[in-house]
Image (cartoon, rainbow, N blue to C red; front, side):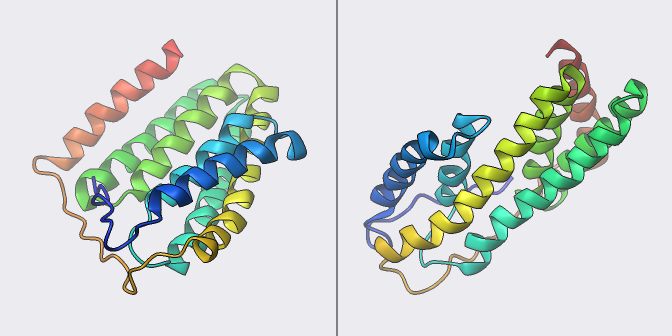
Length: 195
């Protein structure tokens, strides 16, 4: 899977300050917004911003939170529809795990990790409790909306010195991708029952 390169001081001397400000502002917003799951309000904006390198990239700044919200909406809809039928829910989640692992191995694109993270978190919560599931879903929405506004504002206040966007090069993993994804999805389904 693609991992963003280490930020360089020459390109972005305020990278750490921007991340620290995002964490501090997120924690300051918790008492004001009173989110369902406060840690998500701090983790999502910082996590999305941490993956950005060099110059401000509007596609990532706006696209990542929006893609995250769409993914949460789609998977929460699938979990809500299949929750009364546990075998169908486990089968659908297993298919999503397979697709996520396959995307990571075949393309190296981190979008597969987004599919996996949202699928695991929402399906585990959906199997356990409808109230916890709705809290997780709403927490993701709140955190993504905060990130949608926070990332551009912090890049405006603490700008990057670089003027070019980082060109990401995704490299596929070696080996049989289908078999590797199937094994990983099977282990993930097994661990889901443990959770």
